Each structure stands twice: as structure tokens, then as C-alpha cells.
Length: 121
Image 1: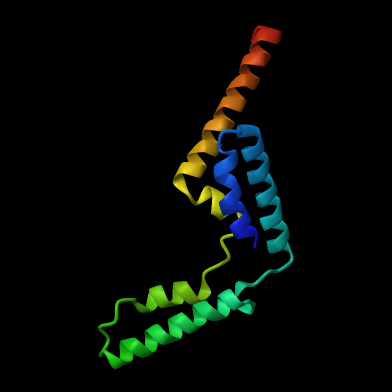
Image 2: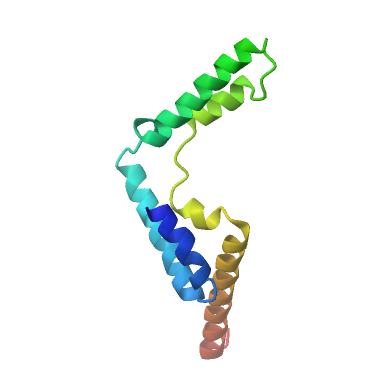
């Protein structure tokens, strides 16, 4: 559910750097809390699905005499990959990441300009 909500909402807030920055910040906090709670993707439906895919790939590889697409290391990566987190929904998409980064850079530039104007340094 949160994934879908973010995917629907982010395009609407790309033109609002403060709201986008706040959303990214909150997703990073959420991700950290979930990880601190010892979240393990292998105990979820997604984790079981990844393990099923890796097992299917291994079986197909044996049936095809070792010519199936994925290598053993790729199978291992699928089965043991860590949860990317909600922040990856935003920051993992180049155009959304770029919009967030530009907003952050402008905010920092404005802060620096304010300090310069107030202090002369």
C-alpha cells in the first residue's frame, strides 16, 4: 500500500521542493525504524516469492543442462536481497531523485546566501 501511495503522490509534489524533501525525510525515518526492528524480507511474502524464483531458476538451469539465463550468483542475489525500503521508491527513480537533489541544492544555496548577507562572510 505505501508503495502505491508514494508512486501516485510523488508526481504531484515534484514541483514542491519542501514537500518532496519532507516526504523523502519521512520515508528514510520509516525505513530506519523498520530496519531497527530487525525486519527480514525472507519472512514476508516477497521474500518467499524471491526464494521461489531462485529455486525455479535452479531447476530450469538443471533441466537445460546449465544454460538457463541467471547465474548462481544472480539466483543468490534474488533470494537474499535486502529490502530496499520505501525511500527507494522515490530515490531509486532518476527523475524523482534529480528533482529532490535540485531542491536540496537550492535550499542549501539559499541558506548560504542568507548567512552571507547577514554576516558578510
